[in-house]
Image (cartoon, rainbow over all chains, first blue to last red; front, top):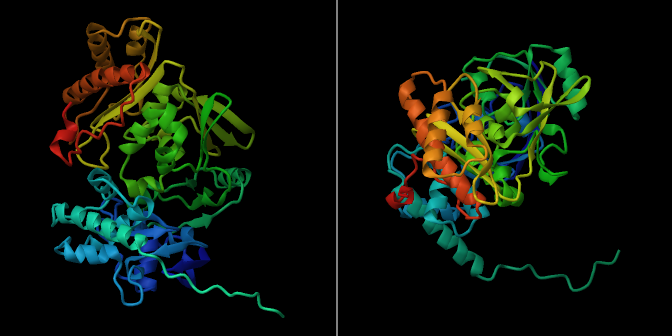
Length: 175
Length: 309
């Protein structure tokens, strides 16, 4: 059995640790980093409760080894909130009542975030296809789809709001 | 579930990976997308002593047309096929196929070459590659060799790859001017293996008849099956109803399914017949120039109208 030094950035924070080769990424996140928002559902690559973003791409963290994430960047549901402000997708899930038991919700939201980064104006079909790897046994998906449409609209509106632009230095620093 | 212990090696070149495979002959597995391998490790259906991760090898993720063929590198993901413009333009059968493999999260990681090298009769690309008359490039200690798709699948999880060889590229010949295909699959739910799947690639003659047909069948035998008798039957025939129906009957007779929870052997053969019929018509329309989008899987019905045709 081999052990490996890995460096990963998780929700913007650099982490460095030694792992067993067979340590699954989801176990690294939950057991070592105590980021238990990422859930383990089926453990057989079906349910998507363990969905995280690896360099911005949605993947099932129960079907990757932690060692494979070496040198890469991870986002989990804990990283969606910024400075006490919920992400548009989180707000929309709350407002549209897109969860009942909540078990699938972190994975569902990570898939939604990945979709909306790539496609700000998804159709209902595109939304349903994007979450087809995330199983929900409570809601029947209707409110989840509504929430993602709601978040898409909010995110588009936010993009059209003039962004904060830092004041440029007028003269280069001399040294 | 936690896999058995293994040593993890991440070579920087294909040559190095081949040397490692040779050094650990029979007790090593290549880790590419890992979307079939890691579940098997977790269920302890596979317990290799060594995993050789090829994901750190640069330059293997390509999907590009070169010298009259579409080249798919060892690390091209299923999602790369979905987004490649050249695939949408000329190899729509590959879009159809990738769209019904597992789910989008799996497709972000899973590789096309892995879908072939795994040798699982339930995988979808093997039938498509048979229909497309693709060639697989294997790299071993003595260099590379080219294996036609029809010589590659030997049985259940068994392929023509030697223990010290890696599938490094799939080469799909560029379809002729009036050539197109499609892949149709019946599945019980999103991400399921096929109850049956049918890949058809047609080349039409100037009169709209069949100059050449490639037909591959998924999950109705110990390995993907090329329906050679149906292909021969179709050659130089007009694609009228009678011919299509007869060809579909022949393809069904070439299937060799087993009864399981997805249905009886007779049922699956009949699914092959129906899907072959539909696939021949869809491929012929596309080959005649119609732009017809990737069909939704037959289980998938967000608004009920989407499936009616």
